[in-house]
Amino acid sequence: MTPVEERVRERLLTKREQLAEAAEQRREQRLVDLLRRVDGALASLDVGDWGICTVCHEPVNEERLEADPLVKVCLECLSTEDRQALERDLEAAARVQRSLLPPARLAHDGWELAFLWEPRGPVSGDHIDLVRPQSDSEPLHLLLGDVMGKGVAASFLQSHLHALFRAVSHPTVPLGDMLARVNALFFETTAGSSYASMVAARLFSDGRVELSNAGHPRPLLADARGVRPVEGSGLPLGLFAGGEYGTRELQLQPGETLLVYTDGFTEAMVGDEEFGVGRAAAALRRASRLPAGELLAACRREMETFLAGAPRGDDLTLLALRRVAA
Image (cartoon, rainbow, N blue to C red; front, side):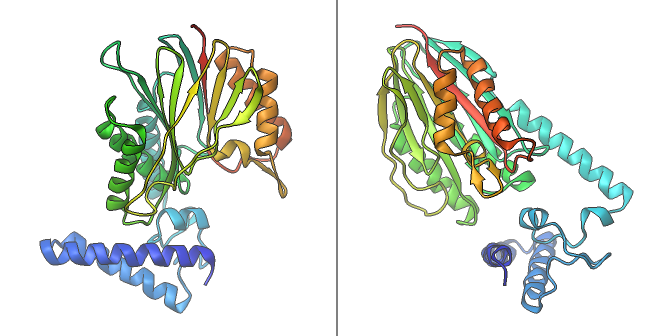
């Protein structure tokens, strides 16, 4: 059994338990039908014909299978009507996802913020959000996350995380406790079949930044000493029901910048070689005096130069937090 098949089998077994319990309690026909489809997919995995298109008898794209393990027809074999319906659904999902994004540029309480969000396809598993303070005494909350996988399934979970973060964020709750609560809720609703990395931040008017990291790539800090990663990380969200997340506090001076990013930046590949944290830090160092939006564009250009025309393999999100006033 291939790694993809093993992952799918685990997900299907988990979902089967959930469906069987729900079907027994509510006895709805749609739950019974879905349970039969899951059983059929598990049987196909056992006999070795899972992932084979029932029309052309060729393997279905692996990414599509991971997004929907119950699919039985490859995109090329869909009818014109089904393909058009799928395109409409993707366009609608993309519109909804973009509507959840905060402003791409923001000046707030001595801070300059900018982000760059580029899905690999119509929708993204990367997530970015901010919660504005309700009073002058409260900090600005920021979130950048990356859900396991790509495409529609990842985008659904991204939207789910958006709602969870909004539900638990409060200025009096420590960031680590907020992530622990989000982790518990995310695990409860996905039964451990999915996970996400995340960095949560609070920006204070005196230049302080409070960070809590759940298995996410280390942010890069450009200050008077140069560029260096910000250490400290807990487990990704959704792997286990319980989790502890610490916090890290930084004090930024005017002109200093924190760069937060998803792994689509540092793990961009050419052959077997990654762009890597070293190249990312060098790009930030060269662009550190530029305005936040221009800084992000410069970092992206260096990644594209490294790729030399090779396709990007993942969603890409960059977030720059610049202290501009004392």
